[in-house]
Image: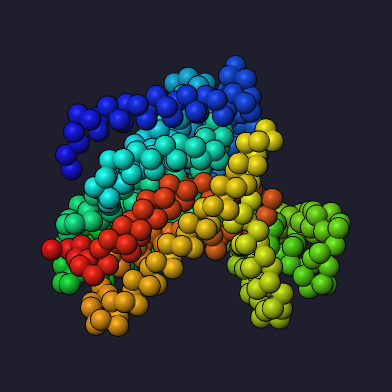
Length: 431
């Protein structure tokens, strides 16, 4: 894709504008000289640092065993490597990743709309999303995950009007790397791999083999889990989420007291009990068997209390879809993140409505639905809505789990508007 001098000037202007807004938002939360203190201010961030230190052979396995069971290697390796360079390195690195995403949005929107003004407006709007800015000062996976997911969709966007397996390979590799930072992305990777292979008119064994190499980061993580925990799981973080969040909360639904004013107290009490019990099981039976027992408990509750289980899952998913940032303490910015998370949900609902209408039109006109439009849109929509669905097992997280999909939601929305209003009848993405 050709980028003109005018585009380069706009990209520079966006970098300056985004730098100023990044400084403004975070200086409202903390003075600049205290930013570095935020890196490991959360319990999760310290676990990434500890795993990274173990990778560098600076601490013993027993010290980080519980953290290693839930934190894949990729992000801890980034954290500890940057920590060796300078205390500010991880913050600067995540700031740069955030800025690159703004640039990718501008370029992607030009590719989609062919209108520089529209692309510039969308990029400026993207700069104003506060949650990704606030969380960038914390050593948490959200910034890297957001970058990798945005980059993967950027690759799909560059591949919109041509069928290049190189772009699909980079797309899958980005998701694979994201999976070893954020394990839930593994399901998005598997879905994407299956859809890309099956959407090919001819299944070329060579391309299947090339696509398969993108799973190398995942296989490295699985090998480590097998070696140290005798399990083929990518991580035990899903087990911890089910045990420490979903099942304690489910007890309230089973007793019909989910609306009680003291519900948070009851949840914490149940969580403490289950957490201690899980620790005892791990000591006696190991991580793999403990994980199987907890998931067996989950499916047992699903069978015995299907309506209560579904109600809690639905309530948590809906509640987490419209939460403000838990990393913003300034009132006006806090309210802004609340409005932005709700706007994000609205935008994604509109995108899926556009998708359904366009696909229905294709079916009624007997046009093939297995085209570039379906491939591009279905891959991104699955990414977005799987993220929403995965929030249905946790609580007290604010909009943290939504951070990685803010920018891809914007790109998809622009694309859906373009197709719906301008190109519905003549859409042919693959020539």
